[in-house]
Amino acid sequence: MGNWDSGVLYGDAFVSARRIRRRTHRVHRGLALFRQLGDAAGLGGSLVALGRLACVDGEYSRARALVEEGLEIRRRPEFDNPRWVARALITLGEIDRCEGDPARGSRWFEQALATGRELSDDMIVGSSLHNWLITRCTPATSHLPPQSFARVS
Image 1 (tube, one colour):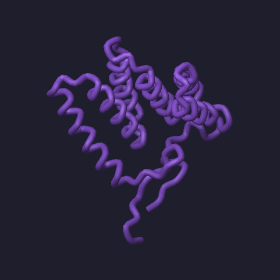
Image 2: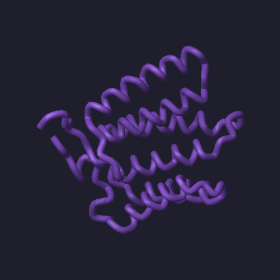
Image 3: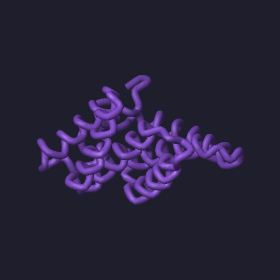
């Protein structure tokens, strides 16, 4: 099969297993460095990124814990970046949807959507609406993990 790698369809994009492993390794290295430097902004971003990767791997409890820790950091007043918060909320919604609780996930998407509209941020609005619609339009499959939709090997 040449250079093809196994992977999953996550959202609208195919993510190769090799790419996930590389990203996870890099984010872990970054996380350690941000902790060592005391860089809370970098730490929060790394935690949310690791949570997304854990979700792709089907490790939902771990994913939720990582994203919630990152969200707690991102909500600190000294950062005052609602875009960071909205992206973490979208990730929590994705975790809930994949774990089988699309109703809970849709509440996170609605919060992120409100923030996106307030900021006129088309990326947050689009991602929130996309994910919210998945929870509303496909109730029979909206809870399935990303791996359920496509696997290429």
